Image: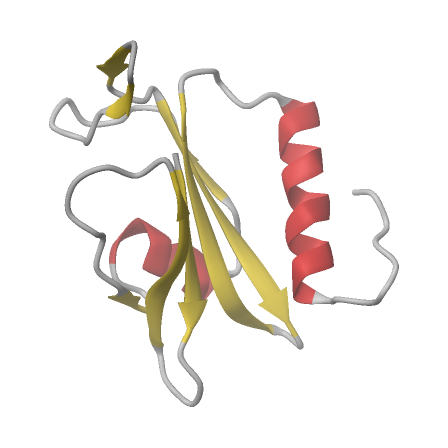
Length: 119
């Protein structure tokens, strides 16, 4: 599952702007510094949460559902500030290659039209 939160112009708030495979109630936005996604927006630093709380939402499909084991929060940085945050839920622990690809993706999103250099 995943969701994209986009920064509101001239504001410290982020609102949901796209999602993948979410079920149930639509997520609410957040302010910079608020919650895990808000901390990522403020620090401009990706975060991986390895200990997802038991009460966290399940990832569901027609075949069943299970609680994600990992959460990944990725800032999209444009001109030195956070323009969006991507939150992903996963069953598999992201390895260094996964994180490298995610870094390249967020760098390309933050600087459309500019070449991306691998980290």
